[in-house]
Structure formats: structure tokens, C-alpha cells
Length: 322
Image (cartoon, rainbow, N blue to C red; front, side):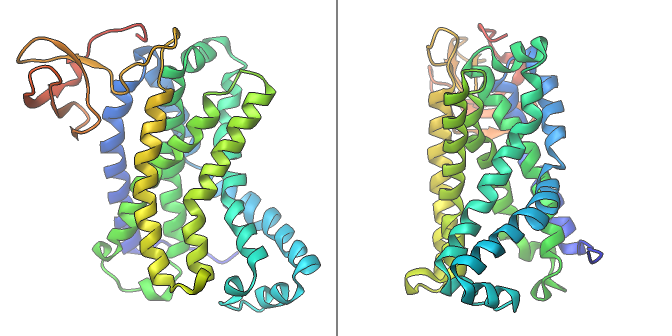
């Protein structure tokens, strides 16, 4: 394998993306998780940092892609020859290859994200912290997605640095990369939550949850594959714009899905970001999804008196999750 070096521009852009992702994620974890669970969420996120690279270099490249090549040789020999010749237009001519690439990341990454978490099921103290109810499970999935997404940022920086068209670009020219990667850090966790909430509930439900997470991952990546394939005669640039818009819509929908799954042991919904006491009117309200997040405070509107103000994390009201 060739020695890979991250360019200075990609290194800076990746660092910026990581800082933004963490700045957005830390307040969400602090508000949506149980207090005794948080140190374990950090540990779980750390275990996911190398998983994107391990999945790519140890599974996708040496195992999955040779399998795809054999399938092409059997069912689409022309595409197999074009792929071996590094024909840049092969995707546009081979629906089979497009379909295989569309499922490659969902199949491998969703399994990889669940790997370390399955060990927690074997240890009762962690099982209680992670799986006591769905309101504990959703933050677990978000921690998994954050760690995997942060690691994936640097994996893609390594891969992207080899492209001739990025050589000499300033880091801010990679703003699209930064925005996309920050969104994907959240999307990884939101998709995996569909599988995580089913863990420990029987093989049938776990299988259904895992297949659901994979299907969502395919749906998220589909416009990107269609872009490379220039599907329906639409130019790649147009598909790229569609993919960007689709990712934003997808993120909004998945936040609503996570909110729906975030329930207590008795099945009653819990505020996704927890409840706080308003510093102004002193009444307790459910923290809104819209707000400005900092690790130690949040600028948000009180649901009781309508005042917009900074609310500290210490103003959180204890509930049955604590």
C-alpha cells in the first residue's frame, strides 16, 4: 500500500470539523443521557474512533471489493473488465456495480458500529447503564455515531488528500467537506439508534433493527451513488446538489425518529434534551430542539415564559433517568 499523507488543508479542515462536531454533541449528550452513564458514553465513543479505518482497510478493500469483482465477472463481465481497467465511466454503465457500492458501506459500517457495544451486554453494570430503557439507548447510539464519524473524518482526509484537484487548495475551500462531515457525525448515531434500541430484545428484533439501520444508510448514500452513475441522464453536479439537500432533510427526519424512540421505562416520552428550570420564571420546561449549544450552557427559549436566555447545564432538573 502506498504511503498516505494528509495535506495541510485537509488536516486543518478535519480538525475544524471535529471541533464543530464536538461542540454540537457535548451539550446534547449532557442533556439527553443519564448522569451515571456519561463517562461510559465517552469510553464507547473512543472505542469507535478507529472503526471507520479498520472497516475500510481490513474489510472493505481486501474482502468485500474482491467479492464484488467476482460477482461482476459472473453477471456483468463487461463491467468487470472496465473496473479492472479503471474506467471512470464504469458506474454509469453497470447498475449491478452501482447497487453493490450502494450497500457496501451500510453492510460493513453498521455491523462495525455495533461490535464494541455487544460486549457491554455481557457485563451487568454496563448493561444497566446502556440498556435500562430507550432513553438510555438513544444517547448510546449517538456516542457510537460520534466516535465513528470523528474517525471517518480523518479516514476521508487521508483518501481525499491523494486527489490531484485538492493539491494547493486552502483549507476553507473544503467547507463542503466540513459541513458534510459534521452532519454525518450525527447521522451515524441516529441511524444506528434504530438497531441499538432493539439490543437484548431477541434475535428477531435485533435483526430487524440492524436491517433497518442498514436500509437507512443505503437511503442516505443513494444520491451519492446515483451521482457517480449519472443516473437518469442527470449530471453529476446536479446529483451532488440533490445529495446535499437530501442529507439535510434526512437529518431532520432522523432527529424526529430519535425523539420518538427516546422514552422512559414506563413508555412515556422524555424530553430529548431533558428538563430545566427557567432562571427567569423559575418554572420547569422541556428543552427545545432549537438553540445555540456550548459545552457548558445553551441559549434557548423557555417553553413557559418565552424568554430567550443562556441556561447552564447545572440548571438541569433531575428525573427518573438520573
